[in-house]
Length: 184
Image (tube, rainbow, N blue to C red; front, side, top):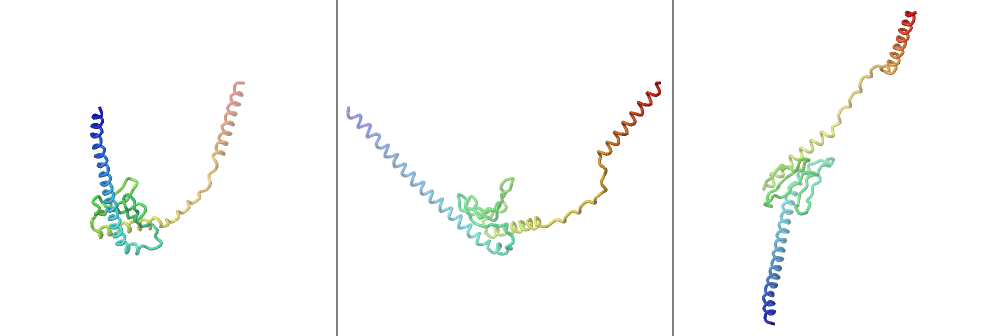
């Protein structure tokens, strides 16, 4: 009777070892993939830093009094180079293409997409110029509207109502008096 127990134990041991080996192998593969993801993220950040350096001359020309732009690289699941609060550059799916996008109330729109740093710098330059023009228009002081010419104040409608009421009462009294004198 002891043989069936040994046979059952021997049969289950290779399965446990196999599962343990498979788990170890899966953990090693996951660690390798994580390392690849970290390397890809580092490569994305490096490409965004290169683009950020290429944008330095553009932002050096922006006057100090213009505080629309807050450029910086955020490192998260998706690294981004922020131009302002609503526009940023991120890497495309192939991790080599720059994608310049703007968030609007109707969703995200792609302003430019290219492998070439120069094309993205040109698109950002156009965007910055448009934003500065919008700012100038918003800051233009509209001429004060002229106050309307004051018309003569109208009489209160209460006085018109009271005058009509009194005249109606007098007419009614006069009609009643005339009717009573005629019936005599």
